[in-house]
Length: 318
Image 1 (cartoon, rainbow, N blue to C red):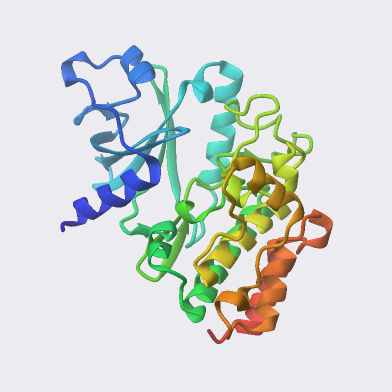
Image 2: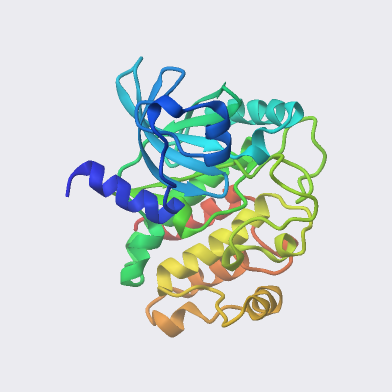
């Protein structure tokens, strides 16, 4: 399969399929906003759209060519909810600038942001690989590989958290594996604490967050997130614990037959021990993950730096 074919395959699985685009000569700002599908050849600033590679809650994602630097990029067209008023757009612009300055080898880079004909868009690094969710479809990872990926993810979280950026939707589908390297996707688009903001909560942040709306992916959400309370770096640490548990065991840390039962599990039950599925799992690793998954944020690792230090100290040789 060609490189382009591989990229389309993982992208459509990650974001969902795109709607059919319109003929080029019919494109207008109204079509962009309403249909959220751009035909091949559409130009957004210096970027030429080549193909739609997926869709998600924030909008649609396209493969494009940067005419200035002659490279492929990924462009995310943001939904109306993000770009429908001036206040929302101003906040988005501020957050995009912060994210663009967040340079880390394990975070998908944001190169640019723009606004054209009523459409807000982000220009991101174009990645060719598979998601961690796809990788886990074949079962648990070897312990050495799981720890290596975990170290990369925590290092990325530490970098972002020190800049006031909380991911809020850390899950296998938002981790791209490019060769041996993990890259976090959609990092920080959900929640960014800026110097003039109050406490981060579900009712503040990007304009697509309606009052009282609980955002994220249920199986990786911390109790405080489910309750619609304030979130911070420790919320990401809980999600990381669920992710790490899944890498080692090949099973979701929390799983149930109904949404209500799943919420009850996250709020009050502990996941099954790693050793039940991987008997050779070190007890120290079990304790590290269990602390990540503490129901009370005060009982978790308080920062990604603390967690990274523990992982490096105990398993740096992996």
